[in-house]
Length: 176
Image (tube, rainbow, N blue to C red; front, side, top):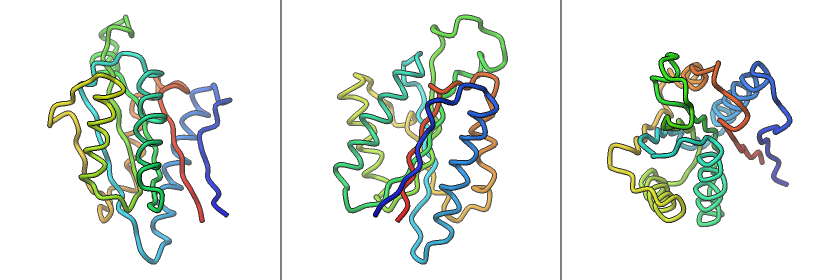
């Protein structure tokens, strides 16, 4: 029987949300370490999405990208965590109107699905559902499976800790 952990939507305080992100990241990374046949761990960065609302990006990633990837690759492993961030200018406190600022996302995926399939699915679904044409440089995928820095990457995910709300992240991690 497959068990999974997913985001607790009742969390509202920043400290609880940050703890939840760190916990999910640790589970995602360390569960792969204990496997005899390891999946790949990818870091995906989506930039220049032309979106300004974290709820819209969260919906697009969760309900469109990851649900579709899972449906089209049922026999594959697909575990993910993503954090949606505001542009750097807002995180530095230089801009006061959040809804005029574009957002981007950092995604960590543990999977046995080919990297090119993931990239193509992201591009096609975001174009189809979000009506957003991503340029080549707007989807960056890096394999961190063997990168020792992967154990501390969660610090990068929570760098905008003063701006994170429950709408700025999501995850789903399966266990067998």
